[in-house]
Length: 225
Image: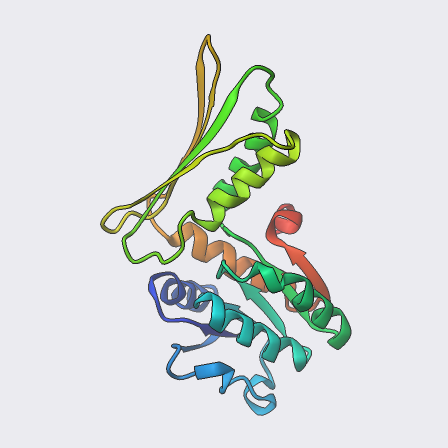
């Protein structure tokens, strides 16, 4: 496969490295090389099997729109842009492109999502979430924490689910879901030892989506990887 990685930050750089390790042809662009999606032209996208975006919310929307308008396939690990998700899904279907997005591409975190849904079914418990990331992470709470909250509230509509965010050094990512009753406390915890799990999941997502049309959240398809 030929893959274009948008974003040369910590995760984007690792995505490019892992894609090369898996035998793919890789080109990577930082935000200055692709300002306002200027590099996402038909000639530049010709011959590409997938684009992977780890940029920033505003840039991601421009990148998604440019890729889908040309019928391309894009995997988006950037969060904070979901207010325009419906429009991007519609564009994917209209142009015959493919959009695969997610708040976290780690397989371990995907299991955490499913376990959280099971935990939320417990009666007599109050739920809370804590997340810790590196100091350069721009969004707080993290997209993963917001997904965990959404999962709990889907099972328990209207439930109060406080989220506490911490930004410490070069923390790779920790998420803790706590269920508290008057009798006991249960915790689900995912602590990333490195960013490699996130990056590998994104590359595997690109391998999955390269010959497809439509729009999916990573939670819907990760069992198929």
